[in-house]
Image 1 (cartoon, rainbow, N blue to C red):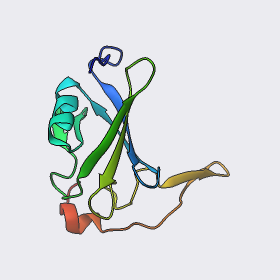
Image 2: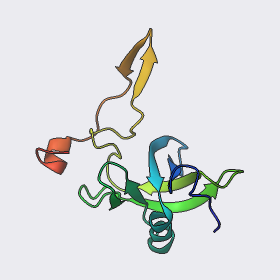
Image 3: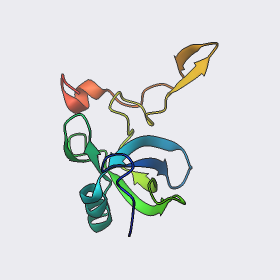
Length: 126
């Protein structure tokens, strides 16, 4: 499990993909501890750059990510994590995927409807 966490200051980007559909759900970052916890628990765990701490995806919403497969790239400094998503969506804005905006004619447009109300899941703050 030798991964290079040094190129991005101790972090490796982790592309999160639905294991059945292939849809990219989100991009997160893992440090060595988050990666170890992900492997040990089978649930995707990330390092929050804004909060400077580990976070288990779904710890507030219940929308956890069950790990089905982990791959690394040729440089061993990025991860592809195939998951089964528990819950209607992965995005904290209420969408199935964090990639719900598409560039059209120079404008970012929402390309799908939300699948849940984040205010009901997270309360007032996100």
